[in-house]
Image 1 (cartoon, rainbow, N blue to C red):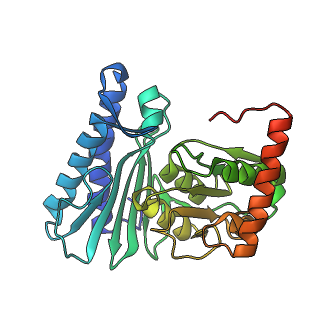
Image 2 (cartoon, rainbow, N blue to C red; image 1 turned 60 degrees about the vertical axis):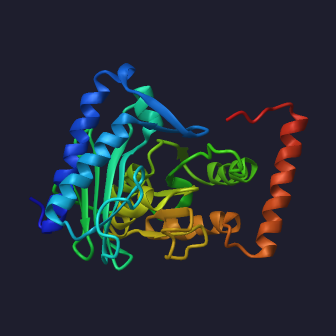
Length: 297
């Protein structure tokens, strides 16, 4: 076992593996999984619910006095006033899962007085287990992991998530992605934010950025990144990002370069920076209209 395995991490790992086996069983017969739509392009399956239930039962059996904040059931389980709150995404990457694309994971974090102190991200298709305890480093399958040593943005591989809801400022996002594509070695969109963050922690990618994320998408992954020596914040680089709906993570020098690109696209950007983005976005629109391109999602 990794030297970082705190008793609470052991329980979270047990919960994540229980959820993972539910997910793996369902993946064998994906056609029979019942799917419903929460909002446009926002799917939930019976597997999300079953995995979440297994996680909550495991955590509360060990820590009945702790609070729960989960994607599907919100805060209806667990203690309501505890300083210890488990933040859970039972199946991050549901859209990938229902198509049979094997990029999805279980994400479990423990926040103490609002600060994340324990993290587990488990990829059931690869049996990859990422763990971190605050102050003790980040691990993948018991091996210490660190963010990449790259410093040159031109050589960096960056991951992101595409907007998929109405009102997500598509044109702004296209403009930002255009800037990142031209200045890096490549842009990827795997489709599970918790795994994207784990991959930054492991040094597989050099940075990650996305808007419209919820705390359960990023709570565990953000601790993995910081414990692996990386930085996490909002698009302007401020560290208090968990409930702000935007996330930027990366190896320290690459993160610094990325803030220069993402900062002006932040909802916390100055009025002048936002005006620059509006100008750039409207010129992008004009170009795509003139060239007859449609920007279908």
